[in-house]
Length: 440
Image (tube, rainbow, N blue to C red; front, side):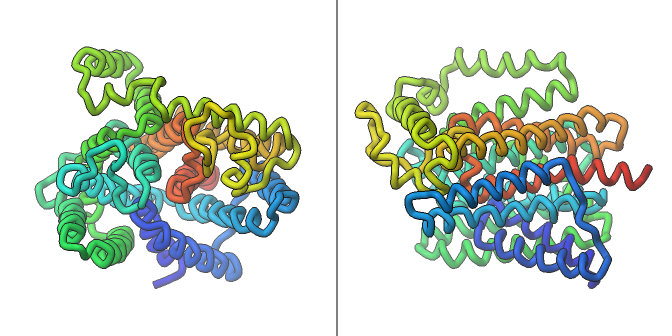
């Protein structure tokens, strides 16, 4: 196997494991970076420049400076190691520029998302994850991480169905998602028997291997099986998102779906309004009980945001330092806040400003706006390309919009799983741009 195919297989396995294991996905990222470095050294690849390079470099430098000026620099620099994950963006830009690689890696993300959503639904139905204080977390250990990833997977699956190549799947094409869901069922059964840890590890390893094998296969039935994934991933992800009872993910998914509707058929926006009206009229308890801003969680967010503003006003240049919010929160906490301690501020821009100061926030917003602008530009231009380009661009735009909106109520980019999927999707519009330039 040559290094280019190895790179594709590794990135496909990485995409599949982001929704199920942060350890496996980060290990595969390290291997992907090593392979890319070897290809660069051998002249078989080149590191492509993007408009995100400057704001990303500025954000990295300022983050390290903020860590150096923190009250506990050693701990703050330890937290700043998450910056290494941004290497995934450059691996993605290089691999996703090839049409075959783009389709197979995004399908692998749907493969892992199907596993995550399937286990979340199984947990809700059979394992007692059906209360507000015990919500389904799938493979990820926390329901917020699981709902954030599921939200993005839902947008990708819907985009593939609405904007991608039209194909009528055969029964045989459903074998791939059926194998994944069978593995999820075994994990759920093993969890009931007290052997969930071992079963989960085996499932993660099998999923990574399956994604790599399917991505590297040149057989037509492998492509047909990938095309069938969203038929199950979309409804399962929607179901999992509802039972997660995570309002920020609901709002993000709603906005992302609206973006997809505007891209495909603006006249159908009334359907989203009809769904909203149905929820208001039918008032399903699992949903309407969460549609309030008067609960303790909402009040706590209000007061932690006030504390975050105070943190920024106190240290506007370098902030409190990465990873320092938990340590300094008691000093800034408002007396009315329900909880005495908070690990983060449940808002992406405010979290960045509090940790890294106003210059850090400026660099973050520069990076985020440039990424979203590129996705919007490619989605608008996608109509001139094939269906594979249209759905990749549209799905990326919808997912990024969902993550940005949900991030106004949750520090979702602080979750490594959400951040890695976000970085992989952020690479798509720049990969499309480079592919178009190379073909010109």
